[in-house]
Image (tube, rainbow, N blue to C red; front, side, top):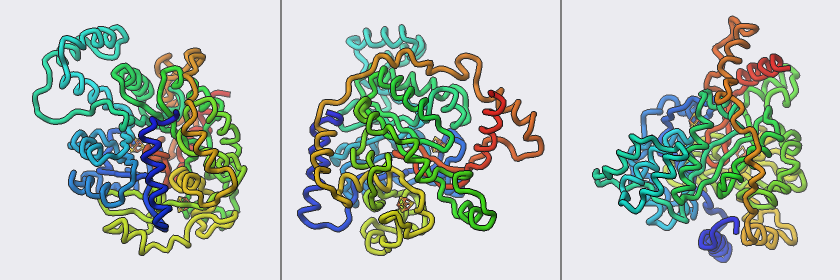
Length: 464
Ligand code: SF4
Ligand code: SF4
């Protein structure tokens, strides 16, 4: 099964319960952002930009747990910012698991091995020496790390333990060169891979979380799936990124520029996701086959952004993960006060111009599960997809040249410097924090990627 049975049943029961009660709107996944602080400054991260004035603020543990209980989503995706910076992340995860939620830790991977070492230290006994030996042999920990682990952990705080209710969800947007370029730091891809390998050895469930951009090469995404499949990761979330920025719409109107000059249009998304159903057969891609049909351009869906609400320091963010027209104090209050009929695209017509090109996972994946545009056979399709055996790991992926950047001395920094020197003199600094992303569960974007696009184009020009 793509998902452990208990988890699939929990989600199915949640949907059936609300359908029987005829609840008009209910939460499926809570995007919980306890803080927006991050250790990275990815190109185009919408979060660290939108909430730049409150980067130091954070939700209390009680508030986080109360929010999960309030909306009662069976799944909670802890995102941010970087959730591993949240000082009470262990307590938060423990609390959510105690509430019987399925928990995703959406991380950029940089601090993940530290948390895995904490777990080893807290559970150390001579019986785990063979595991330490293996981790040492595979260079996933150092001798110093092993010594620290052997001393144990005595601060009395919980640690993040493997559980079938828990997934590490690691943000990876391509192979080494591309990923490090997008996160603007060389070595991050390598760290993610090492953290994933270590987590798998320790018995955790691990998924990857990828955003497809205008400049994303689809062949590379396929290779990325192959590579991570060979590491036996447990699943993948993939979503088109989307820059809805009204300023761009304005430029389209006033300056006559084409939308595809600026952002991923629906037509481009369909082109990039043309093979998503085939990937769904080959790889453990999370989500519904109905959403995959939508991405591939085979059907329409209506946005159900209320099913993946976002809660952060300012409240319940409406109407969706991407757009902020307001924050509300309560989930129910948000459901009641937002005029949902104003948003989304229905039968190809955008109710709000900002929604026009959007096909993101956080707006449309739940639509596939909730049967908002039901077609005969959808339930069976969804059932079969989730309950049938999951695709086997593809060990062919070991042949993929995943480390095609800094590891072989061809990282983006040297190229970027050369590109800036060659043609961007006088331009704003490269890779400012503008544009889309946010690595949380589907990577819904906000903002402007113009600078990144310009620089990528120049780097591409240099390569050819
Ligand atoms: S269509 Fe996209 S941008 Fe519009 S409300 Fe839904 S998720 Fe948000
Ligand atoms: S996309 Fe994620 S990792 Fe990157 S800066 Fe934003 S919050 Fe941090």
